[in-house]
Image 1 (spheres, helix red, strand yellow):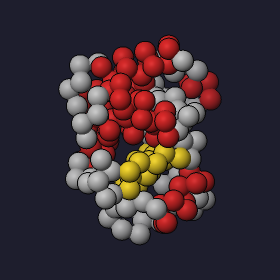
Image 2 (cartoon, rainbow, N blue to C red):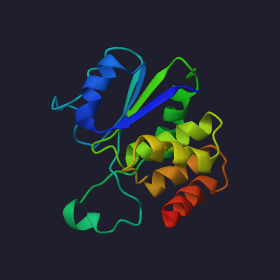
Image 3 (cartoon, one colour):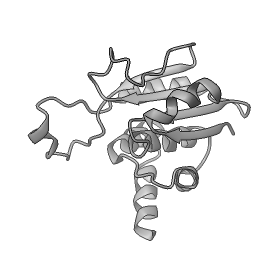
Image 4 (tube, rainbow, N blue to C red):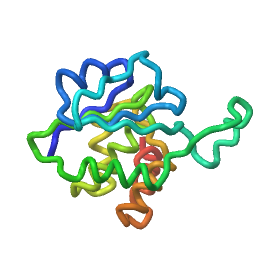
Length: 163
């Protein structure tokens, strides 16, 4: 299994240069042309995706933002294609703004892609990122793409109910 780190945007700037062989960068839409903490695309081993840390049920966002962007099945397919060829010698860095929700959900999905059970994937993510609180909509998208029949969302929910 490849090595995995999950972090916030600030820490990702250094880790992407010094540790990662592959980086999945999850940013808010509107930051495409901002240089503030943007990781330079040094090679084909970096992928950037732009969507907000929300779910369709997050109606409170409507009060603060008239337009928001959910993660899409196409973005999840692209992430899975990018991470499909990871090997044990690879170092995967997944980051979002805070390193808590989007990035941990994506990490759970990628771990399932590489053979971990949904329950083992969340346990692994929690072991390396204690403050993890995976975005349930992103988990649902991975569940659908990986044909896990809802087990990823269920495993995360059960893990948080136990703690």
